[in-house]
Length: 123
Image (cartoon, rainbow, N blue to C red; front, top):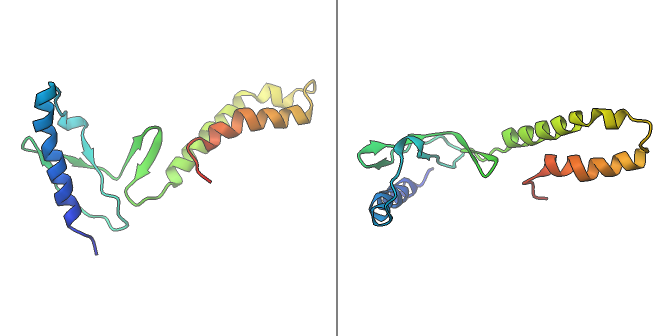
C-alpha cells in the first residue's frame, strides 16, 4: 500500500518554489526539473508547477551517483567498477613492468584504483 500523502506534500513543496524564486530573481526551468518517487511499487505521480506537469523519471544522477526509484544500486555499482577497470587498464604498462615489484604494484592498486572503484560506497 502506498501512502498517497507524499505526492500531495511534494506538490505543496514544489508549489512554493515559484513564489520563493520571484523574491530572489530566480526561475524554475520546467524542462530540467524532474520528479522521482522512491518506492518498490511503481506509482505514477502528477506534480504541476506553473501550469505544467513535471516529468517523472525512474532514475537520475545526483552528485555522481545514479539513484533509482526502486532503491536498487546495481547500475551505480557497475558504473563505479567500470571506471575502476578503465583506470586499471590505463596503467597496463606499469602492471606489466618487471622493474616494479609486486608489493609496490599492490600498494599502487590500493592507493590509485580501489578509491576510484569504491568512491561513494559505505561499508
